[in-house]
Image 1 (cartoon, rainbow, N blue to C red):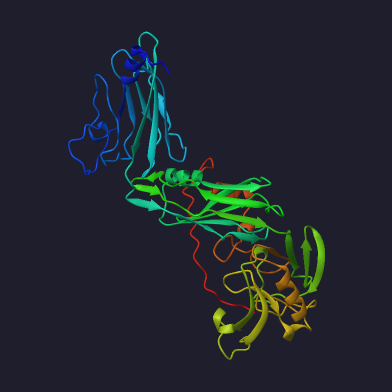
Image 2: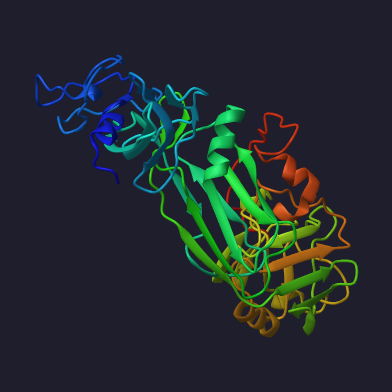
Length: 414
């Protein structure tokens, strides 16, 4: 760097101006321009940022040149290395930010200048922004671990976000990286919930890393992103259990190859098992199942109260794959259950030990309706990819995207 008088003159000619709504600092009488309203300075300007006052992140950042100097380049970055977008005047007289500043962040601004004789100058200036009044936090799911290839990623927001532009800010900051890489997208389930899935299932033995870059970023109004805990998922073998309700048979595949064929019984008329793709939600070695939990009157012909073993849950409302020794005579021949998939105790135990959370349980050939995407577990895969993409705030032709999903009660079915 030049140490000539001309170089120092060029360096002294760059001024950082931040239109601020400043808080009251612990020190008074400071000459720090960050504590003042914008003004054109003459002569040398010292910017120390050390008086305890902080900049309002909702206000734009401005850099001006004085005298005959002109600005040739400005970069502004926070401690995480994120750049602030900006625009340089054609004559080099000023630069102003076009992107929002982060709240509660430390910024480093590097200004390059040139005087009338071509002498180069540089200045590095640091300042802090004030903390946000409201923080939007993101809780990712599921927790880090190993899952089946059908496991969607979820993001629960700490506050509702309705405005399409604000949703786009949130969605751009939620990062999902997989190895191997696959095409995928976020879908707004409601104003506080997003789900992420690939176009097809995750690859077997993939690694999926999920993180938020929202921390400090302005979402809307006084709402800024807060810190969030990342998650790391891995997938195991591709396990698919495909039940043909009309044939009363389940075929279990591992990585596309059949490994077991199981005689089953599914829902009888009036209680037909849901068609479509479901995802394993949990495994319970013992469940007490009562007909009253799904609205069957006690003492009626359809009532039941039974101990059930080796139960693998696929809906929140109580659809399971489980041991049903009382119906072994019907398994493989007719459908006699109240919506669950029943099998022998030995087969149910094998199934229980073979599958994990996120594995795929698909039903075809049933008289039942198709599993809904969001309100009763993970039916995400039953939504066509084109429609799924429409639920992204970043998709062209965005509608308001609201499709509330009401939580279902835990109601075991038999």
